[in-house]
Image (cartoon, rainbow, N blue to C red; front, side):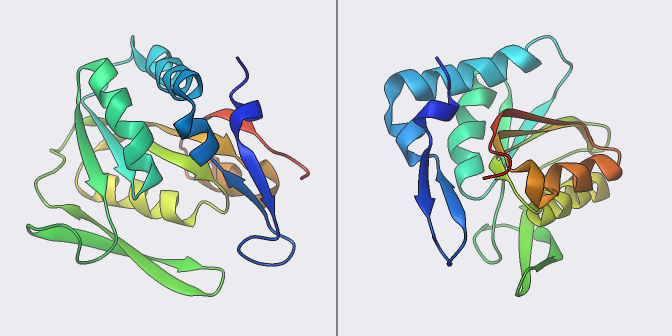
Length: 175
């Protein structure tokens, strides 16, 4: 069952010239969702991982059932002001401006091995900031896992240049 075939492409969203890869069609498909979670969980079943960390918000949708399948806890990385307890954050640059992500200060203990999950890797700015937060807390990123990779945008290479391992279930290149 090809996961890629269950992802909708929306031309010119949110801006002219952008081909938006919409995973909501994959998520609403019970076979597609199950295959996505099982394929990711199967990849990491034999690896030593202590926690799954997901980036807001679609990383939560994929990361939580993966954590459940692996018998692990799940940690959210969120936008500023969304977590109720004490946080540590990291700013990062966007194409037009900047943004920030945060994590609870007690979410990751030094030496814990972490799987970072999100739906899509494009420029890699958010994922790079998430890796930085995890490492700042003393965590070790085992791998950065995505449903979709847009290799022409450069996010995978950006993470790999930082020494990170990257895995994606499918990619949309040259499109």
